[in-house]
Image 1: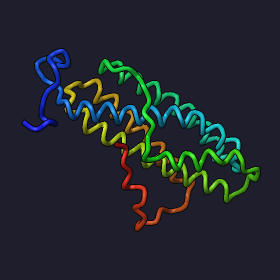
Image 2 (image 1 turned 90 degrees about the vertical axis):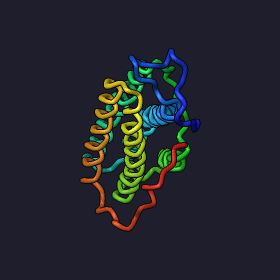
Image 3 (image 1 turned 60 degrees about the vertical axis):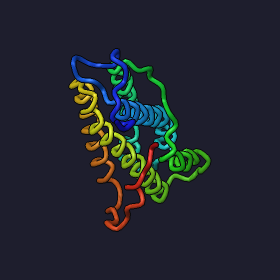
Length: 186
């Protein structure tokens, strides 16, 4: 039996369906990555919002602050549902982008170019968080817990809707640009 097929001890069995150890571990790690990202965004978004020059971008960022808070709470709800301690795990796959975006507080100018950089950073973060949510959704099925799958599906849908709003503010994406489609959160 391969390691990823071993089941975890009987106390982790929900009903008569065992949780696959490898899937549960990866699910937990991905959830920790998303939780870290949502918490980090609650700090970063107000800085970006203060730097935005367009009212439309500023309002969208203000909305995203509330959304990030709601998503962090939803992560906590999922942690509790799977009886896991809510704890963030630094997400290496997006850290460089967040550091770069965080440096915006040192740039005094508010202009269209800065707005475009903000939209670009948020696009990268969105793509990364969509990737995590997609992975979580796939992994949630192995947990045999319909509530978890439902909560993750809600998160994924909200992320997709948020990305559509952001995409309307930014330039058309380059179809050949797959730089951000290859994130790794492990």
